Image (spheres, one colour):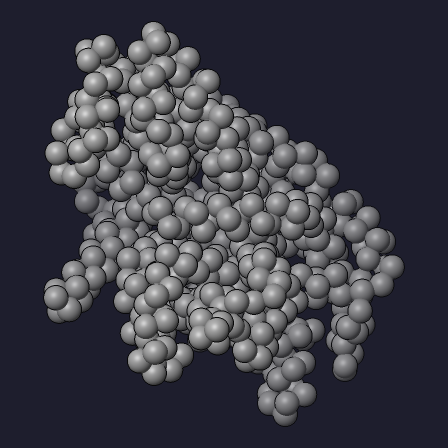
Amino acid sequence: MARRSVLEGGRVAYTILILTALISVLPLYWTTVIASHSNNEMARTPPPFWPNANIFHNIRLALDQAPIMKSLVNSLIVSSCIALGTTLFCTLSGFAFAKLNFRGRRSLMAFTIATICVPTQLSIIPLFILVAKLHWVNHLQAVILPTLVSAFGVFFMRQFLVQAVPTELLEAGWVDGASTFRIFRSIVLPIARPAMAVLAMLTFLMAWNDFFWPIVALTTQNPTVQVALAGLGTGYVPQQSIIMAGTLVGTVPVLIVFAILGRQIVGGIMQGAIKG
Amino acid sequence: MTVTTRPPTAAEQATPGPSSRRPRRRRRSALGSRAAYAYVAPFFVLFAAFSLYPFIYTAWVSLHEVNLSNPDQMKWTGFGNYTKLLHNEFFWNALKNTITIGIISTVPQLCMALGLAHLLNYKLRGRMFFRVAMLMPFATSIVASTLIFAQLFGRDYGLLNWVLQEVGLHRIDWTSGHWTSQIAISAIVTWRWTGFNTLIYLAGMQSIPTDLYEASTIDGASRWQQFRHVTIPGLRATIMFTVVISTIGATQLFGEPLLFAGDGKTTGGASHQFQTLGLLMYQQGWTNFHLGQAAATAWMIFLVIIIVVLINAGLARGRTRGET
């Protein structure tokens, strides 16, 4: 009983949390309001507080202004490739760092973690020169290839596999004469699946939202969603409603997926935090 | 080797304790050692090609005069780009802006996250709803959230100015002011990252044993005292982690100041009032075509990050020493 009185949330706790949830979602709601109204309507006092059917008209105008549909397809391709590649490569090396013994294991792992401190800015110039030489500017592989690995992913998978895979099980396979790859495929992969799913979701989200390298490597002729939206936001557009309508089209798909998978993503972030 | 590994396993289970260390190490070596390189190879090959090589090549570029339109032609200037940078008022301006925006966006954000995590740690109805709702901004991209916040902070139609007017205050031209623009940009960063850091803190709090709270309740501690004397000490490592990650992020700030201006210019406002180092580097490289200059700025950003991380590590060490 005493425990309940300590840990039960009071009315104040609920009020603050509800307010925070509102602040988290309100800007997105407000986007739908602006997307439904012209500049003049928004300038009225009080401003309109509800979205209306004009939003569909404005979405159509936004799609004419910027290649948003194309960018959605591009982003889907880019983010899927990056999520798949990163998950696969990070699981492979996470397994090696967690369970295999090899020379330089410790220093390589420390090195990998240290690279988290290296800013994006430090890689962008040579990458751009390289991509320009290969004539890859404006091609999706220019965005996919350099983003295919993540130091965080290796660390995340290692931390999971160290605890989740019993070494005895691997040894049993080893004694039975199975190759390391066979052990990886039939013992490690099934156990690693939930962590791989979380890493894939997080990587997909990061890749979808990535901006710095895509804006350097791509133009609005063959953009990802973020590049297309940036072009729409900084170009000449007479009505704010069009920019906001475009922002909605580019953002809502990933937010819906996020709302559906939210529980898993929240779990994944918290899991990564404890072990990190 | 493989045959002899079985008996030690059983022996180890029978005698737990420090002696179990050695057999474990031997068992691990039983698992393929040469094969391991094949597993880490894909990561390190890609890493070397797209992170390590660029990292070093950027240093090389920073010692040359290079034009974006013809990057093959490199003219050696030694440390010329760096001395030019140190005499450039815009570099110092950007450094100052990066630091002030970094502080305004990181400090309140982490304090709020700590408080919110404390609340979420209570027994609550619908706590999964609160967690997912708080993470919504994190799922919204930098581009989208900056475009949205540019509207909220808009001078003529902005929701915020309408509220200010209703309360009887003056409308503010957020973008053109020095502090107002930096506050607005910090608000975007805070909005996007508070929920994420809240979850990190919450995870840390949940690994603090409940008996500590029960014991402190029996001793008559208030909730605030519990927060200060049980929660905060238990979270020290987690707090360190979030401080380092947020400061690294703040040092690289780029998309928010670029898009907040609304005109696509890379100056960070008419009087460079919110130009960060990340944006300055982009301006040098992709607006002015001076890749050498941009490379030197990139290395300065790295230097700032290293200094910040070292300061953090020093602070953490000093504090733990003070406690013991």
